[in-house]
Amino acid sequence: MILLGPPGAGKGTQAAILSQTLKIPHISTGDIFRANIKSGTELGVIAKRYIDEGKLVPDDITIGIVEDRLKSDDCINGFIMDGFPRTIPQAEMFDQMLDKHQKAVELVVNIQVPDEAIIKRMSGRRMCACGRTYHVENNPPQKEGLCDTCGGTLYIRDDDREETVIERLKTYHQQTSPLVAYYEAKKLVLNVDGMKPIDETTKEILTAIEKK
Ligand code: ADP
Ligand code: AMP
Image 1 (cartoon, rainbow, N blue to C red):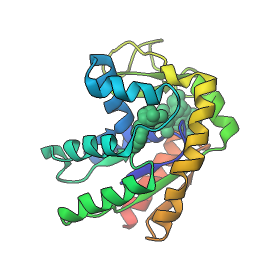
Image 2 (image 1 turned 60 degrees about the horizontal axis):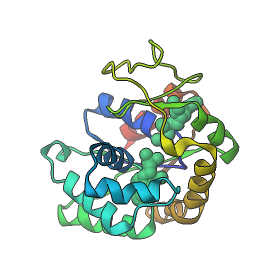
Image 3 (image 1 turned 30 degrees about the vertical axis):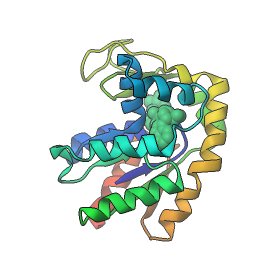
Image 4 (image 1 turned 90 degrees about the vertical axis):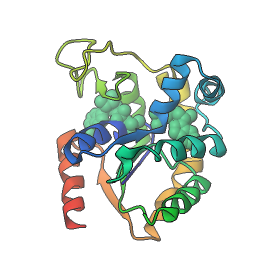
């Protein structure tokens, strides 16, 4: 399954819940880049340059990390892609990668949220290194500043400041939104309203999976 949508649509939030419910891994290219930035790897140094400007990390680098991640045993029964693919070449390469293993994309959930709402959401987003995401008002943790799942200290993403969010939205409209038509042509898209409460969106996605 692929979760598609602008930055801040709720992809990571839904992916974390669906991963627990369906018992398949949540693969976020953004989380992989952030972990590399934190541990100071060469990949992290390169990725940071693009991420800080609200731009996409080049396709060859991104495709390489996904290819590596999909080799893990935990991906055998499926996986949830959050934030990948983000360009048409990435989607084409992903199709080829899956095809090699006699697999294919089964569902693309397109989470729709208007740009105005996104800027507001991002300013209240709080992240945990374990992959869970919170919002100070819409989705707060039980204990302020700490993750409900692992107890880790929550942090604010560098790229969630307003100037960078505006750049990321531009990047989304130019490079990522064409993927909706790419997957619609393959009849794989489920459009969901990302302005609804988090649990309603989860239910809609789970119902679509049951029907498949
Ligand atoms: P993405 O992974 O698409 O960038 P996130 O899952 O990190 O987005 O969500 C962005 C912010 O919006 C987070 O602070 C999250 O808690 C909040 N959020 C997610 N889904 C909803 C929703 N349905 N309604 C309100 N806020 C939401
Ligand atoms: P995310 O956590 O999904 O919001 O991603 C954070 C940032 O990582 C993005 O703004 C991009 O700079 C980079 N990134 C994540 N996924 C991709 C991808 N599939 N292709 C290129 N860049 C990506």
